[in-house]
Length: 178
Image 1: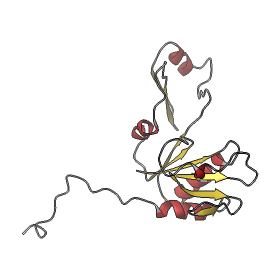
Image 2: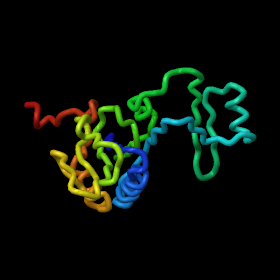
Image 3: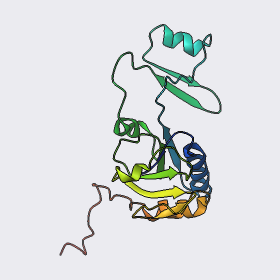
Image 4: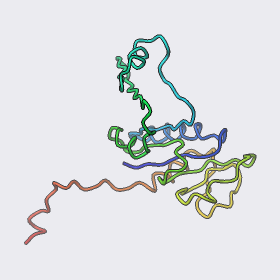
């Protein structure tokens, strides 16, 4: 699967860009999954609901399923936070995964940086940043893309697409093996 990350400082526009990129890639007929990393306590379940009661009762995983979607909630119960690689392995098949956050992981990333940002650019220290989406001409030694030009950003992302891997059960034709 192809993975591209969107990173940057708080309030730089990461979610806006990630959402726009997902919309653009999906609009081009690609299957896109996403992973959003949160540094704070995150809970998608509400106190008082049945699934919340199941989790609170001690269930390690709870699947909330309905006619339109399902969600799996997994309680870590003191275990270490899963790595990005572990989370990627849990996703279903897709063309692309857009990862928002996971700044310290080594997957290919696009940094969102704004002229008025209080933080210095991450690309100065992070060698896994492959492009910068900015509202100014950043001094990055690679592609600097207009943060508002989602079409160009999607084109850049797709230019990095890995070809599909060949199945190990594929046999060469007899013509290739005299």
